[in-house]
Length: 556
Picture 1: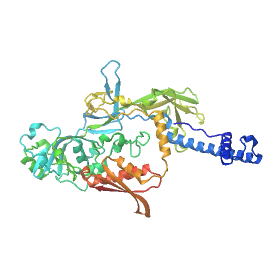
Picture 2: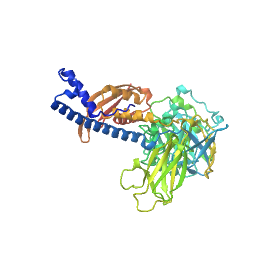
Picture 3: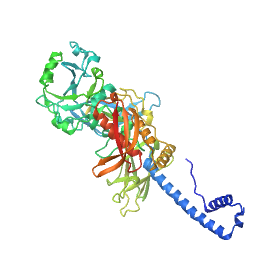
Picture 4: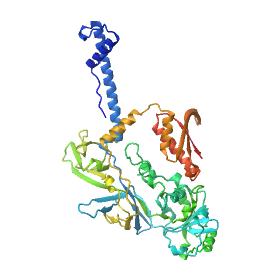
């Protein structure tokens, strides 16, 4: 980006003199021979224009630096860690793993690198086992459980995939604990993309002790669970990946793979026998229920309207002992202050590999915040960060305080290997850095991928200037239509028009956006409604303040 400097008063005066000669050839060529009053007026105006240009450049620099800091606060480079799915063997019915639990992979070569993976947040794992996944079509049942031996279906004659018109799936789960343990648990779905979409947009109904299924407490994972929920630290805190990137964008391949049961679903879920009708169909179709399987947790999945039912005949898995692990390693740096009022701490890792500074505390247990996050005067203990020779340096100033400086400072930060951690094959990450009392064996069931290198200073500057140029500028219908088509590949056509809509406070003007999609690309009206909500939020984020949209989805 070129740095433009404001003109001084002499340059402005000379330019005004040249323009004046173009307009009136009788004006002397030398500015010294100008009429004294005219020269004085031109000099006065040049001085005023100089001050105006200085003010404009000052506003530009402040706005540019503020936006760059919001995208690139205090030397952050925003690397994105690679991810994989870890599967664990548990010693107890319920086990929690926190971000300090490390899984490692060592390259078997000279000078090979060691890669660390850990949960993004504290995850609850359960030793629940799925015994049956029963696909029902008419009076026929087929067990498509992933862990089912092939011989168990030897006596069952299934219909062809093209003739199957299934509407429900029944799942039987064996678990020694109580139903409330499933609260905040993570369910991993393993199968083809078409199968996962149909499961995600089904309605999940909990089974009861009587054998019936509750439709009052059912939920649709597509409306209740998102990638943002899986990567959220707590109810409000979400990871900041820099710029406009979100967890849903970076980890979109996992969108259909995870389900978090709702609280109402878990509260109504009870252990009980198989439904009488289902038990009769299982006997009729040669599916055995052993004595130990008569006391299971059952749930029913009401499949959506759309989707290829033939794909459901292929086996798929439902697991309770899997979670997302990202390539990050949390490190701790300790330093004595020596009683100095100004203390600097240099992180030994490269700036591009630093994922985030997790926490900074002193010997008295007090927490310090980065200066760009402080919003009130109630947080006086702050630190500043600067980048020096590709290293991040933390500065602490204790001079404003009456008490002496703390004895020591502790910095917890996490690092990542960026895109170097991509491509580790499934089954290779099978070692714990430190023994976990609740885990006996671990392995990754998917190859690692998704790692993105850190942004360079040039990339961040280009992004910042691009956003500044488009900020609060007028947009036309052609641009809005282009934004709509790029939001989702399933949108084939987009049209815009001026319109009005009724709100709680009256009627307001808005822009009506009609997006045309294929009917076969959506499994249910719930999926269409979710697209409408997300598209509205996307358009509002791209547009000037107070721009209102009314999004309509047309299925053809």
